[in-house]
Length: 370
Image (cartoon, rainbow, N blue to C red; front, side, top):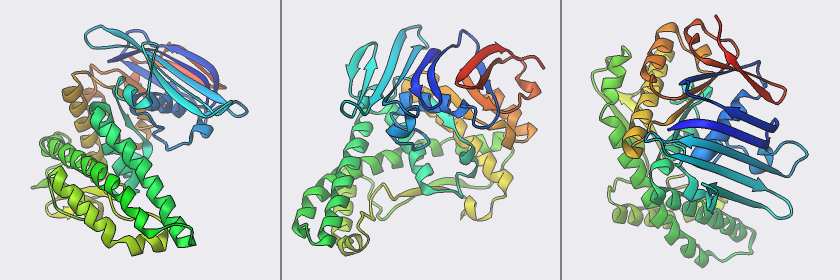
């Protein structure tokens, strides 16, 4: 998949912006901090996965003082088919968020994955020592782009989770009935099982070539595996749902005490275990960054196989955090893909890139000269 153009309207720092990318593979978005470079990648992440990769609210995505935003892209598939994608979000006259594929209105969930993309954020360099929420998001963002069933289950789970949490708080305040919890728990167990199974299967696929990718990057741990951290051990949807239902009932008192649901895939985690230990507990900073790069390459390969398309690669300020060897390996591995990369300073090795100078609500196109 190749991005032909991107239009932003009243999105973040851009009142109106149109970028046309042409045939070049590598595009460098250069500018000082807070110039708006990451906003462009964020807009593309919304088109690809249906949500802001930075976790921003819809209101925060709208330019200050405005009540809607629009993101539109033209893309060309690997078999030369053209398509348009668009998301419009508004808060006036009534709150609404809709998607369009080839100008046909669709629910956002149906649009998800039409522009396959893999994004790499600066905080991903601390993936294994940082918040579990980013590790969960990594799995979810991959799966919603390749499976409409997973996307539907994730959306349904989030809605039911919100309802159960609201009921827990009402019960704690004396305005809700505890017997009503079972209404929401059945849905949580069913959709939670689908999400958990999706996570397990994805990690199993990534596991297949993890050691090979690590070795290519110079890391030679004797044994490496991806481990899913959860309460339970079932491996079929039926039995996972049964386990989750039992847990929801068992932990009701704890959930009532804190006013939220403390068990389920929204609390699950995963880690890389090397030679029997989590790399978060012993690996050096450099080793952990090597593992993060290996995972990036695995994500790209997974998307290519499952979608039959080369995904768009979005790299946010990665070069400033990588040594020369890892920079070279990164660019070699992504040859043949369309890459959008943000940076404050353009490295010499990006001499063949198209440069976009970003700032003051604009992105001006030129050619890199170093």
